[in-house]
Amino acid sequence: MNNTQRLDATFAALADPTRRAILTRLASGEASVMELAKPFAMTQPAISKHLKVLERAGLISRSRDAQRRPRRLEARPLAEATGWLEDYRQFWEGRFQRLDALLGELKTNQLKTKEKKRGRRDR
Amino acid sequence: MNNTQRLDATFAALADPTRRAILTRLASGEASVMELAKPFAMTQPAISKHLKVLERAGLISRSRDAQRRPRRLEARPLAEATGWLEDYRQFWEGRFQRLDALLGELKTNQLKTKEKKRGRRDR
Image (cartoon, each protein chain N blue to C red):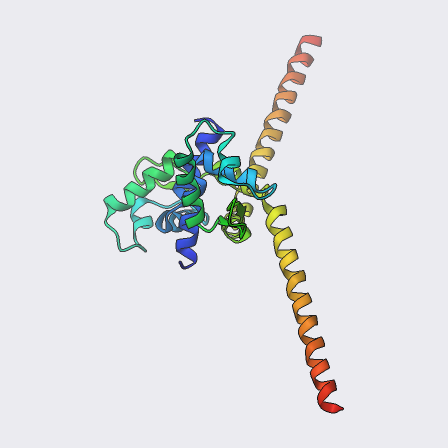
């Protein structure tokens, strides 16, 4: 897989709440398929299907332990996806700042209007 | 759409190189469908399909201009997807640091082995 294909596979794998929950679980340590299946109201084959998608994207791998075959989280695809999104941080932070400034202006204007009204009443 | 559904839609929309390229283009300013289609060897209906996916995910919106209907990039879904991935930064940075340390150790060991060999030769 090249960079583009890896990003495709990573984002596609992240587009599912069960798969995201599996990754969250694995961030705190290795786990077997049984352990991973426990919190979900899902059959083991359904979980295995999700694990295959994650594995193909390189987001998880199998550890050596032949009996349990625990899955572990892999760092690289997560780092690459973060890297892609990181380029847009400046864009959305800029937008939010402009929104903040706009809200600030609206508040100031509201206060001014209120003061004017109060001034008129007090006259 | 709730938070989970929005993340699903955002990551699914990002899982395509054409759609990512469209977002990259829009990060530098609004563009019409014609302008967006230009760099791709694609029919306009094919591009429109991609735009629909991006629109449904809330990643882009249409500006007021009734004639051109230019598309603009929206900040929120990008910020939310970055937010989700941000929680894993500690994990992968930790992994890379351990990897760095491991590589450092390997280098030191290699140097030691070389020095030993040289020492033996020099004897």
